[in-house]
Amino acid sequence: MASDRLVIDEALGDHLDGLARVPDEIAALHHEMDGDPDEVMMTHPDLGALLEVLTRATGGRRVLEVGTFVGTSAAWMARGLAPGGHIDTLEADPARADRAEDFLRRAGVGDRVTVHRGPAGDTLPGLADRAYDLCYIDADKGGYVAYLEHAVRLVRPGGMVVADNVLSSGRVALPPDDHDPTTAALVAFTRVALGHPRLVTSLLTVGDGITLSVVR
Image (spheres, rainbow, N blue to C red):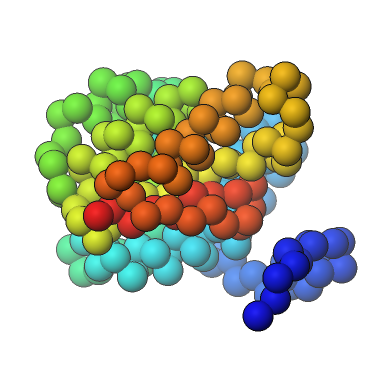
């Protein structure tokens, strides 16, 4: 058993990127986003493929996403839906919601994804308990702890909760006094996720780091 962490250097990163298989419709969206200031927010193929796997592994009937952006991650998860499965995705920014709906329609999954407009904190309380197999959180980092508490209620026992960006581009390793508000919020969230009595949680170094939790 290896006891050392593997460092992803440039050569290994290039090798992994060469193995990535990005579906045509998602590759087209990446092309559209070339040069966009927010391009960096798009879901990395490694994480996208993992989200598809997790959607399939949890049954693929109902998925909740907190933070739609332009629809990349929803498109990855839609590939893992079971027949009749559906995604509810929450987006506070109207322009991004419009753009996501247009992309998801063109990607052929518009009928399987509902984009809910408005702050997630307004939508989440009205969703049904234990209705979802999987919840993916990738929204405003200051809201992560609150979103997690909703997810614990909304995801069925045995289902999964995934949260993105928990390594904050490596800034979590800085001394606490050097943490910006976003990094501090992500450190606090990770501690909550790892210690939550209703969750079994692992931290994975996929993309910018994710927590992967199973609901007890």
